[in-house]
Amino acid sequence: MPPLPRHQHQQRPRLPRPAALLCDMDGTLVDTEHAWLDTVAEFLRAQGSPADADTLAPFAGAALADAADRLVRDGLTALSAAEATARLDRAFTAQVAAGVTVQPGALRLLDRARALDVPTALVTASERHVADLVLDTLGRHRFDTSVASGEAPRGKPHPDPYLTAAAALGVDPRDCLAVEDTPTGAAAALAAGCRLLAVPSVPGIEPGPRTVLVASLTEADLAGAA
Image (cartoon, rainbow, N blue to C red):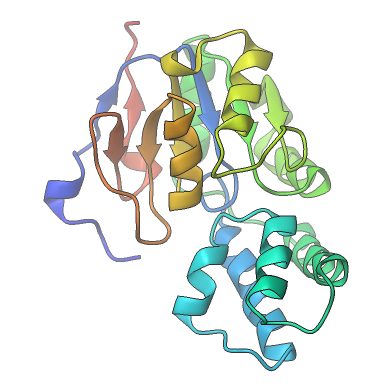
């Protein structure tokens, strides 16, 4: 992704210490968003459907079941939603199991939160078995809880995953900082009342009163004072 225009982000903003740090996974902490979109693209091509950027855009940040439902609803596959879900799950899980790359600055941000005694949650639209693979890579000691697909009443872009994570940590979501990379995840975090640190992997997240945009997690830090 090309660098954000300077007016859209601050250089190494010092973010106030939150009550909790609530982090998305795919594309935010690990470079799996592109693997996910590659999985969807390969599926589309196998189904004889277009796999251009416009077709793929709605699948960024989408949960597996939601992606399968969209494929069926938009006439992009002749398979049932259950069959599409199973195929996407197998392909994406295989890519993650083969190894993932941690995003620059991700571990430093997580460790900074640990040093400040800020509880941290992983809040992902991926399935639990995929989340567990990534937790092993990132280090489970860096997280106090995690919420995966199906573990909240509704998935992103609804606020439920972030509300569930905040409740598990015993904090007010309005006092939390969410970290996201897609418009779908950003919508969920903001709907939950969180402040948002956005590191976009696809276009569509706008700066705002509760949103700070950075080109990389290396550009952000948590301040020591509450």
